[in-house]
Image (cartoon, rainbow, N blue to C red; front, side, top):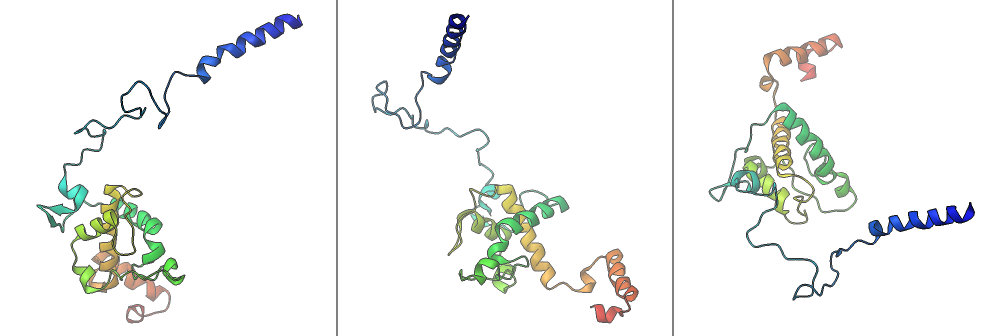
Length: 197
């Protein structure tokens, strides 16, 4: 019985040998098959990986006819703004803070202060500028192109526009239905609408 079990164990261990020792090359292993001695093969010129064809200039560069664009490559919805806020809070707020004033936690610990999104130069900058800065980096800010997809970079740019608009917002900018809620809420708390403003 012991001899049968030992023979069976030996046979089963041999079954997995082909799975462990495969006839293949791992990256950067030398190869005698190819003239250059490398197992890695260079990409064929002119090929593009699936899903990586980037012919939409606006979507992937932030420009139209080589000029920074002030429009988005897709309609911005509330869901896009929510996604932009989420991505902004993850990637941008450590330096730019949640309000976009440039006083994030990293700055408080000694990192150079980025400009506030509220300065006139950035309030007047086209949205393509923000997309390009996230894509290529600028100054001490490195590129986020490997971390944030192009669509999410546009959503973050849209959210930056929301931050800029909210910084100088007035009660008259709020839609009527929402304005009534804002003016009624202080009255319920014992404040006059003027005190709430």
